[in-house]
Every structure is written in C-alpha cells, then in structure tokens.
Amino acid sequence: MRQATIERKTTETRIRVTVALDGKGHYQVDSGIGFLDHMLEQLSRHSLIDLSLKAEGDLHIDAHHTTEDSAIAIGQALAQALGERTGICRYGDALIPMDETLTRVALDLSNRPYLVWKVAFSADRLGSMDTELFREWFQAFAQAAGITLHVETLYGTNNHHIVESCFKGLARALRQAITVDPRKGDAVPSTKGTLGGSL
Image 1 (tube, rainbow, N blue to C red):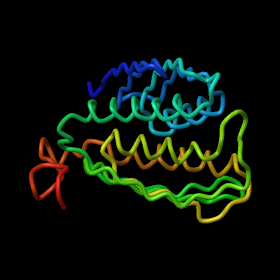
Image 2 (image 1 turned 90 degrees about the vertical axis):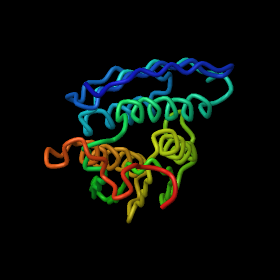
Image 3 (image 1 turned 135 degrees about the vertical axis):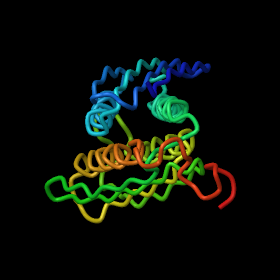
C-alpha cells in the first residue's frame, strides 16, 4: 500500500496527516478552518486519495500558519507515499468548469518543486479565510510534495467557484499522475533514471 503518516509539531501548529494513494477518496478532515476543510474534502474525493487530517493551530492570530503547515504535512505525506516514484504516470492535467469559472491545472511529479499561480480574486476573504492564503497553500504543497504545479483560472467571477475549481483541478491531475502504469513496471519515469535534481 502506498500510504504514509506525517506528524508536524511546531510552536504554531500541531498536525497529523495520513494519506493512502490507492484509496477511494474517503476523508476525515479537521483543520479548524471551515473553508479549508471543504477544499481538502474536494481534494480527497476527486483524487481518490484517502486523507485524514487533524490540525490544531494558532487561529486566534490568523489562519496563515495552519493553512501553510497543513499543506506542508499533506505534501510530505504524499511524497513519502510515492517513495521512489517508480512506475507512476508522473504527469497529470485537468480542465475544470464550475458554472461561470474555468480553471486549468497541469502538474509533474518531478521532485523539482515549482509553482506557477495565475489566479485572481475580487474578494479579500472567503468565510474566515483570507483569499491570499490559497496561493500559500498551493506553494507549500508543491514545495513539500516535490511537484511542478501550474494553476491558471482562465475566467470566472465567483470567488468560491474559482478556489474550488483550483482544488478539484489539482485533485484530478494528481489522480492521473500517481496512477501506476502497468507497462512501466518498477521503472522511474525519467531518462535520467531518477526524479529530481537538475533538468
């Protein structure tokens, strides 16, 4: 089973995450931030990655540390569950419509973290969450998981739809990329024989 558990404890947050890559999209999520929980549930359901997350953070200050550290812990768990990344499809992409919004996500499980984020919001907050924190979540997740990640909202006006299409796009692209291709066996999907490092 490709699964992993990460526990992250700092002076700001205490987080425990378990992921199972070959799951059915079951989730149990409690970050203390309602809107973030809703997005992580979408991530699990549409990627078919089972996700358990329990976070306690300094929400009396703001949601920044809990948001960022949750992404780090999930990313680290994903990276650990992938192991040497042998046999995987490696690449994934998705074009996600949500009413008036259309978002494109493309990713490479390259072990070379990089984020391109072309997403704009017309409101400062969604629920209790600052909209600027969504970029922080995707940045921290890509960095911790070792993912080259491009997220672009092509158009849209409703901020809830924009964010949700980004998470659903990530989920569907991950679902493709983590899939084991039976034709690849235990080969690393790179002519270098390893993922990461220089191009």
